[in-house]
Amino acid sequence: MNSLIELTAAEIKQLADVEPKQASKRFEIIANTMNDDQLVEVIENMDIVTLTQINSNHDISCPSIMSELMTPEQIRDVVCQQPLYWEEQIKSNADELASQTFDFLTYLIRIQPSEAKQTAILECIAEEPAGLFYLSIPFIELIMNPSKSDLTNNIADTFDDEADEDTVGFTDRFESEELHNLSTDDPKSLLALIKDLSPDVEKAIKNLLRDQGSDWQAIIGKFVTEIVTQAKEKNDTNDEYTEVDDMFSFLD
Image (cartoon, rainbow, N blue to C red; front, side, top):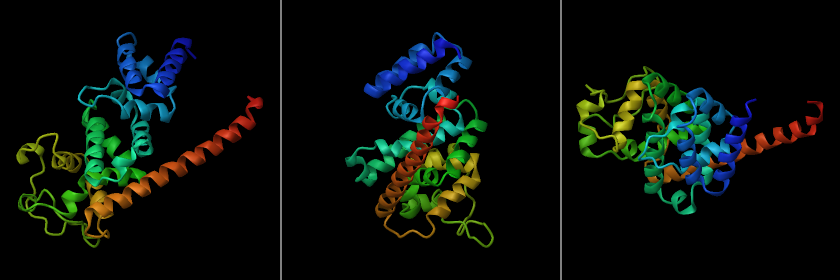
């Protein structure tokens, strides 16, 4: 393996362990000296913890070369891992959680260079149980407790009927964000984008909420607990595999 790639990945990982924001900035600087193929190799040499630390601390008001080059699978793993780094005051505040998950998903999805990759990311995240929980959080209040204007515009239409897979109460919904005049900092905009890119993911989000109670804040709390639990269990499983690999490393 190219020693430059290894050294670069090691440098960024070491920095991320101490100062994730600086690691994010350092990667952006290094990106000016490497081509995309080299940068992809650097990313591949980073573990999921490092990728999560860097992406979680990136200034989301600025484009991210790293998130643009990451694979849908890497982005899914980052999304599922990020809740382990939420501070307690965030985990206990439904509004903060809805805002944080919306901002992070918007940052990861809208930065992508093509609709095809955006779609692949959404579908990849939704395939993971914890990922689907995460995808749902920004829209729980919108779907479970919609405003009158949202109902009038059919933005917050209700759940899919299992028998015919049509949306209950669905009328002439405007699909595009432009027709709704939605800004990208509005959760309704992201939900409309998901509907346009992957209707199946939007259905999965709404069907996940089908059997939940009416208290949207309680639902967020329940989902957060589930996400964090699944992330911890996945880490424990990965640690077990690592221990086994270490035991037999002498065979390499």
